[in-house]
Length: 86
Image (cartoon, rainbow, N blue to C red):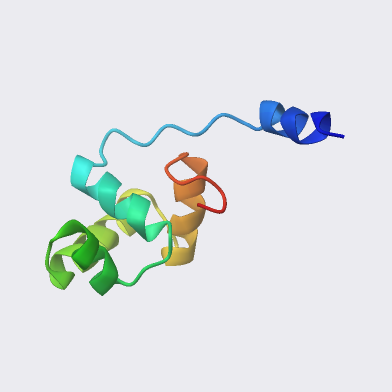
């Protein structure tokens, strides 16, 4: 039975590439946002102000054509920035 999970992992699609227009800081914000924290929590994790975190999230929503923060979470997993359950 141990072969089944390994087979599923092997057949999982490769992560989508992150668009080149996403900056390094936006990538950091996106990775954290994929775990579901508030703008305040993102700001604390990156040592930036809450307004800066909110601005980064807003730019990511536009840049990645995401409908909302929930869609960003899905994209984070598709880009392979956060492992499922991680």
